[in-house]
Length: 303
Image (cartoon, rainbow, N blue to C red):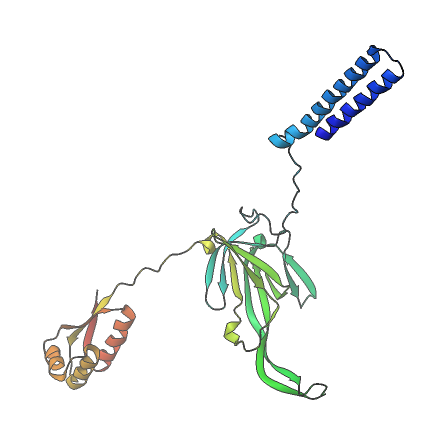
């Protein structure tokens, strides 16, 4: 800005000197001076208009638009997500909303028809996988650099192939090999990614149990609902009603059941009916009741 003003003043001075040398009148000088002043005002005004918005932040800079993610907005719930349950081969169960990569479908190659079936999660009731074949692959290496002879390293890995069975909402089944497809489960806290596979070659030194795979996907509100902890089974008591004729055998059984000594067990049998053991599950009580009855005694189960 200062350089601009100096330039204008210099121009004005040169114009005035030129007018004097040419015997110009004072009007020429005044006219030149007025023109320079007007030019200065216009320049200052223009510079101010350009700088002011940038300082005040009034000019909206164009924002660069990000390309749409193929997985959709991870912060919002996917509209195409389906409630359901995902079960892993190690017994793990996860519930939530399931979805595939956006605009993708589950593709299953039907060997019998020699064609691909493209399925939407919303039209499925379940998807199950089982091990079709499993092979142990040995690792080999060249015996020496440049040698044409190979030797085993002693390391192995497991190579598996899976067979997929899908059941549609109308009950129709489609069996075949699935094209490798990621499936996502959102439990409301985070979205986790799993793979639905045709084959799964493991890493060397991995055991078959280390290759955890998606065993089943069940779709629907019922499958997605957590049943909660199982109600605790009511405990029962085993009661000896009478010993019967084989008293010695019954005493032995009573000692085994109660952990009592010979004298205490004999006295308990003589005072029947007596509670032998409380706090049993019904299955445990039934098993002990059968043993006592096989020895000729009578026993019952009480709450």
